[in-house]
Amino acid sequence: MLQIKTPDIYISEPGAIEFLGSYISEHGKRALIIWSKTAREVTREAVTESLKSQSIDMSEYLFEGYPTLEKAGELAELAKENDIPLFIAIGGGKVMDVTKAAGDLANIPVISVPTIAATCAAWAALSVLYTDEGNFDQFWRNNHSPKAVIADTDILAGAPIRYLRAGIVDTLAKWYETTVSYDSEILDFSYINSINTARLAFEFLNEYGTEVIKNAEENIVDEYTVKTVDAIIFLAGNVGSYVGEKAFSGFAHPFYHSSRIIKETRDTLHGELVAFGLIMQAILERKSEAEISEIVSRFNELKVAFTLEEIGIYEQIEEKLQIISDRIYELFGGIRILADHEDERALIDAAYQADEYVKKYGREAAYANG
Image 1: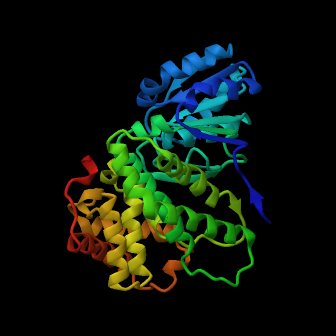
Image 2: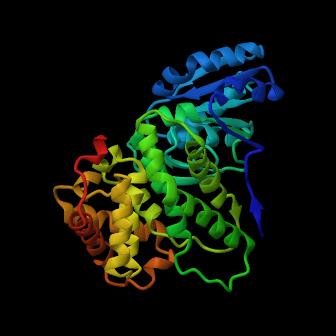
C-alpha cells in the first residue's frame, strides 16, 4: 500500500508571511497561534497585521520546553474547549511537532510557518515527541501533513547561520540514508521516488550549499537561498511523504534520536548530531578512508564536522556510548545497516573512529558557537 501525505500548498518566497492571513481565511475567522518566544519576537508584527487584514481573530500560546504527547493533548483540549478551527505553528521543529500532533488529536488543520530552516518538520506528517526532560519518546504518525507551509525566505535566511548549516546537512542525510543497501531491482514507486528526490536535494546542496551559507552571513537572499530552503523543507519533506513497503535503513537519524538520552547532547542541533551519525554510518558501511574523508571534508566546509566532545559526549565517554548503543539496538535494531555488526562494541568503536576522522582531516574550532 502506498500512502501519500503532503501539504495542500507550499509557499516559499521573500515576504511570504505578509500573506499568511489570506491563506488562513478559507478555514475560518479564528486561529490559535502556537509559537516560541524567539519566533514571536521575529514575526509578531507581520503576523498580526496579516491576520487583521483578513479580520481573523488571533489567540496565542507560548510554547516552551519539549514537544510531548501531554502538551499536544493539552493543546487539543484547548482547541476543543474554545471551538478553535485551526492551529498556526510558528517557530522551529519543536513547535511544529507539538502543533502537528495537537492538530491530529483535535482533528483540525495546521498551517506551519517555519522561522528556521533546520529540518523538514514544517512539511512532514510526523511528530517526533520527547519526554519533559528532552529524551526521545516516540514517533507520532499524524494522519495529515500541515494544510499549508508558509516559508518566508527573508526570515529563514535571517536566522542564525547555525540553523541553516544544520538544515543543509540534515537534508544531505536523506541521500546518505535512503541509499543504504540500495537495490535497483526493487520496483517500489515510493522507494524510487524517495531515492530520486533525495538525490536531487543532495546534488543541489552539494554544489551550492557552501555558497548559500556565505551569502547568508552577508544577509544576501537570492534564488539559491530560496532553492536551499525548498531543498530542506520541500524536497527533504517529500522524501518521507510517500510511505511504502521498503524499510528505512539509515543510521544517522537513529543515532540522533538515541543520543538524546544523554542530556549533554540536548544543546546540539538535530542536524549537527545527524552529521556525526553520518560519519559513523560511513564507517559501519565499511566505506574506504578516502570516501569517509570526503564526507568529513564536506561537513568541514559547512562547519558541521564535530568531535564527540563538541556534540556533548565527554567525561565517562565509554559509558555514555554504551548507553547510546544499547538504545539504538532497543529502538532501531531492525535497520539494515546493523545486520552485519554483531560485535557489541561495533557502534562504540564507530563513534571513536568518527571522532578521530574529524580530528585527522582538519577543521575549524568551536563551530557550535558560530
